[in-house]
Image 1 (cartoon, rainbow, N blue to C red):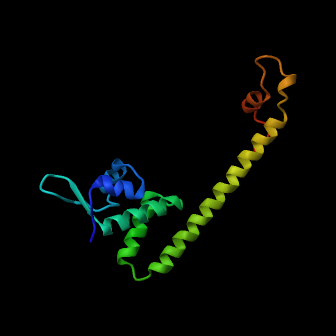
Image 2 (cartoon, one colour):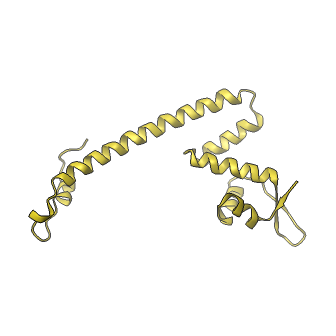
Image 3 (cartoon, rainbow, N blue to C red):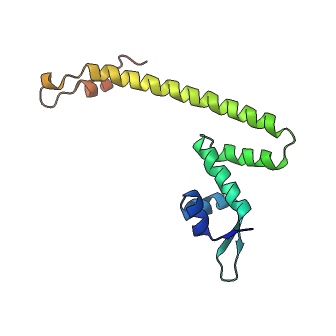
Length: 138
């Protein structure tokens, strides 16, 4: 089994060592063994767990959700169904965010259509003026 120091582990997954320490502090990563000289000592299982955390974060899972997923992975009989439900919920949240982002983009597009830079006096900005009004909140 391959062994890693914290810097090597961080390099493998392309995160900072502080990130690994933080994950240990909040319980996502187990407390590592320490060498006689006090260095943190990690195993290939720790590396697998860290990869899991990083990939789950990339898919939009929060640290609390990742903690739940790790717990399901370790102890649940109904792991697949529970994880499927978590993934479905995450997709629902992502779709809501996409919808909200599209609304924001459309609102900004409308504001930018009203902006004709060559026609504006110095110091006038229709976008800033529109942000002060209650019109077109959609």
